[in-house]
Image 1 (cartoon, rainbow, N blue to C red):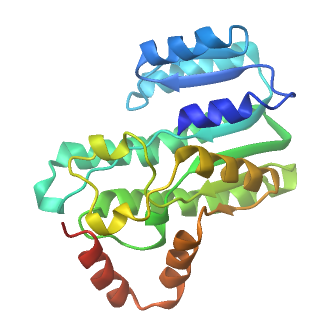
Image 2: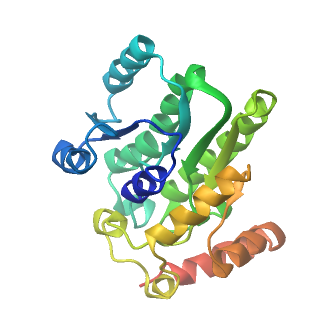
Length: 240
C-alpha cells in the first residue's frame, strides 16, 4: 500500500519530494530511479530505535515542511496466541505500535497548517479477533492514538486520518503465516482503491477512512453488538 500512496502523492503539485522508508532498499531504489529528484529512498529497519535516531538527525539538518506523513508499515500473524512465538507477537507490536508512534512523534515539529497525517489502521481495530489477536489489538491502539493525536493537533490545523480497510490484496497475508480465512476472501479489495479513498478523506479532514460498504457495516456492528456476539462471529469467520 505504501507504493500506491507514493503514486497518489506524486500527483500533488505542491509536494516537492517524497521520502520513502523501508527495509528492502532494492525496491526503494528501483522506485526512486523512476522519479529522480522527487523520490528519495531511506533504507531503515523500523524495529530498530537507531533508525529513528538517524531519521531524526536528517530532519533536524534539512528542516523540511511535511505536508503528508503516511505511516503505512504494518505486520500481522494469523493463528491462536499459543501457536505464535512470543517474538512474532513482539514484532507485530513493534511495527504496528511502537514504530508508528515514534515516527509520528519525530515528524511533529515539521508539520504545518494544512498538513495531513495518514495512519494505516485496519477494520480489525473495530473489534477483537480470535486467531488475529495481537494484530487486531495493535490496530485498536493505532485508532485510539490517532484520535487523541488528531485532537491535540486540531488547533494547529493539522489532521489525522485512520485508514481502516478490510482485507487488502497485498503481500500481507503471505507474511502472516497462514492463508486468509475463506469467509474473508469475499471482502478482499484493491490497494489502489483504498488509497484513493484515504487521500480523499484525509483532504476532507476526516478522522476515519473506511473503504467499502462491508467494512462500514463491520464498523457499525462493532458499535452496537455485544462483545460476546462479535467474538463468536469472528471465531467462525477466522476458522479455516
